[in-house]
Image 1 (cartoon, rainbow, N blue to C red):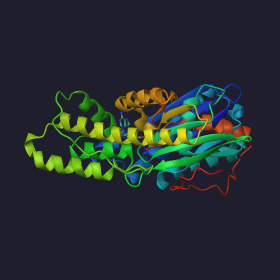
Image 2 (tube, helix red, strand yellow):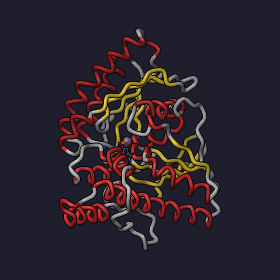
Image 3 (spheres, protein in one colour):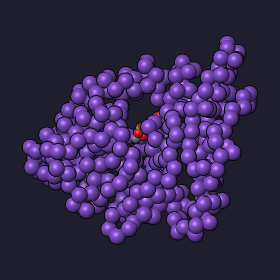
Image 4 (cartoon, rainbow, N blue to C red):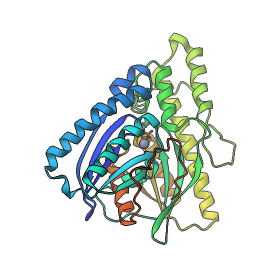
Amino acid sequence: MILSIESSCDDSSLALTSIKDCKLLFHQKISQEKEHSPHGGVVPELASRLHAQKLPLILKNLKDFLQDLSCIKAIAITNEPGLSVTLIEGLMMAKTLALSLEIPLLAINHLKGHVYSLFINQTACIFPLSVLLVSGGHTMILEVKQDSLKPQFKVIAQSKDDSFGESFDKVSKMLGLGYPGGPIIQSLAMHATEELYSLPIPLRHNKELSFSFSGLKNAVRVEIEKQGEHLNASALAYAFQKSACAHILQKCELYFQNQQTQNNNIKHFAIVGGAGANLFLREKIQALCEKYSYELLLSPLEFCSDNAAMIGRAGIEEWKAKNFSDILSLEVSPRNTQLLF
Ligand code: KG4
Ligand code: ZN
């Protein structure tokens, strides 16, 4: 089996995945949301200290579960992208385990990990595939193609500024609510009874395939200031979520139209990443996929946000490709979003 470790942001997580049938045998994650919530976002120094406490705790549980560590054949570790001070915590643990157990290390790109969240507990992957990746750090459309043996990942579109998930976090902070903002804003929006506000849809008249959320975030700020104590927070959350999702929808539709004119053979579209849990977004993308005859793949809700199970599933592919990393020289690459092999 493969032992996988994830610590790229504010979730400490370890998993064990069977190499033979890709079954998830053990998975534990300790989120730090409660600790970061009073700050309205992740505080890297605090996150790092919490990983140093929580990762060994989960390792202890994993050891109690497994008893004999000799069946672990490799360690899969997220080494990019993410917060440097938190990636290092996981990498140190991974290197120590790999050296002491005398087994190889598999370096996993976190964004690729999110894509493999679709195939946890499944032996086969579905490629070629187009992917909408929406998380706290990234908003991207990716294409994954199976050229020769290894899947190739290509970034088709990305955000010029804030990410989709981050914009929910910032709106929640502006409203004086907690972190992470995604679930808070989503449930607030569900309680809206009337459409009181109209917010702009970013890059609406722009035909380029990219995303932007900072203008919408500022429009929310202006509305909050304008309304003062008369603000209806549920109606504002609804208006914000509607515009943010309409923006994603318009760009996905543009991508689908481009695909049609290029006679592309990709038949599957997936939503992955923490913000892929957004039910409003899921519903709208489902309808769009039906219109353009794509089959929609969704990660189970429990594997949308950061977790080590997806890193383990990605690790199986690296194991099969014998893509081992040198234990002593492997470093973290906090900003690498290129996804290149
Ligand atoms: O993938 P993830 O766990 O961490 C990163 O790789 O960034 O994503 C976390 C992000 C946060 O910004 C959080 O607010 C957002 O996902 N999120 C949501 C929802 N649930 C989580 N955003 C919108 N709607 C949601 N239901
Ligand atoms: Zn993530």
